[in-house]
Image 1 (tube, rainbow, N blue to C red):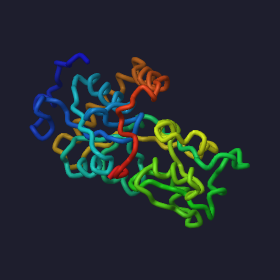
Image 2: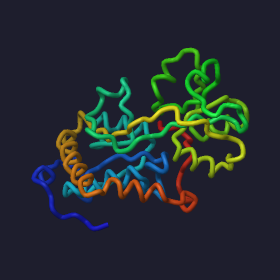
Image 3: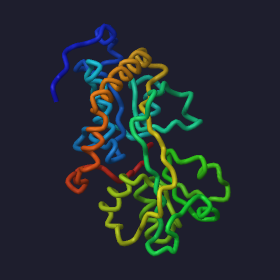
Image 4: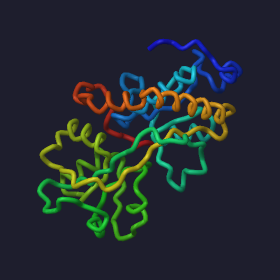
Amino acid sequence: MQVVTSWTLGALLCSTACWGSSNKVLLCAEDDFYPYSAGQLGKPVGLTVELMRAAFIEAGLDVELKPEPYNRCLESVKRGKYVATFDTAKTPDRKADYRWSTRPLTHIRMLTWGPIGLPHKKVDYANLKGQRVGIAIGYEYPAELLNDASIIKVHSQSEATNLRNVAAGRLAFTLVDARVAQTLINKHDLASKVANYGEISTLPIYAVFSLTHPQGEEMLAEFERGWSKLRAKGGVKRIEDNWSTLDEAAVPQLRTEHLTARD
């Protein structure tokens, strides 16, 4: 990647709390959410990782992304350790904790996953009532699921665990993003044991910036400026298209099983 050397006045005045040792904007990137953001050999890779980096480069800035578990990223941004993190859904309990990007980075397509061979062609919230449905601790889920007391929510440490429990008959269903599920199904050899029963919800995911970091407000403005330029020149679509055609089996080093489930 070409190193950008044109800096804005705000970037030049940025304090050491904002920059890493190599003069880069310091962001926290989730280490276990492939193909959006995951750790590979200690470095973050993924669709939203590329989008964040590209937006800042369009603004004339470079970034350093530190891979950490999801909930740790969120907490560190709240405390001001990092300027920002991303892949966050705008849930009521988190809305007031951060500065949010105006536009979502992308959308998560939540599919309902169940055992092979059910008579249903599509499973919706009505079909989940009275059923044991796996949810991963720390993840965002649709309000229709979380607020329905008749749906039995079974908490686990990972989406991989939920899919394996569906395959083993310990859960009736789970909700997992289409891209993430395909990665986990391939990794854990579950293709003959679980099936998707249709899209149940779409969640926009955003970049979130710190309210306590001294450069949080400024870096959000820089990101927004870079994001607008990236969109205008077709860069957002180009990155999305590149990832939509990626052969996930060609990236064996990724940590795709959540041992601590975004915490």
